[in-house]
Length: 194
Ligand code: HEC
Image (cartoon, rainbow, N blue to C red; front, side):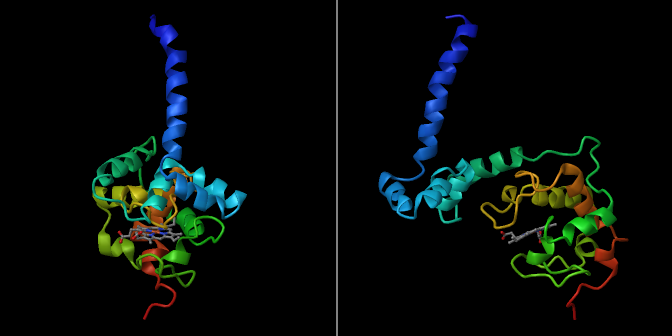
């Protein structure tokens, strides 16, 4: 068969296969149980993205044998700024970090000089002063914000870049807010700090 003719055949084979695989994360009995939650509930559960389905299935604790592939796939979702600069404008980052309707970082993290932070995630108080601004720290911080699951599989932390909550540029602004030693985040006391 000519390669051109192979394409429709490949599509015919792979699309149903992908659908079958997506469904097979749950056993038939589990699928039935999920359906008892009502139509809307069942739709959310049974139509999860494959990575979310894995987290649901394993109650957010992925077994060691699937972990390396999972992390690799999450890492592959991360995109970087074209100019390679991971630290943008901390003042713009401040607005994004402290806006409930934007990134809402403070609701889970302590350390903001603007709002009292939550304790769902670790404290980020004086993050930039504690970690420094090395290339590795910039990259780690950018990547965690872009796709937390590349480091913390199944974490409750939003996956800002991977799921489209923030643009690449906005993420670089937040990175600067956390890391720039001149940023209010590192020079002003966190609300609630002792
Ligand atoms: C829904 C809660 C939640 C939100 C919102 C959230 N995070 Fe997180 N974050 C977490 C949790 C929880 C962890 C720790 C990872 C884990 O154990 O799941 C974490 C980890 C981190 C880390 C790594 C900390 C370290 O010590 O290395 C950074 C940096 C971070 N978050 C920054 C942010 C920023 C910046 C925002 C906003 C753009 C944000 N987070 C929004 C929950 C959240």
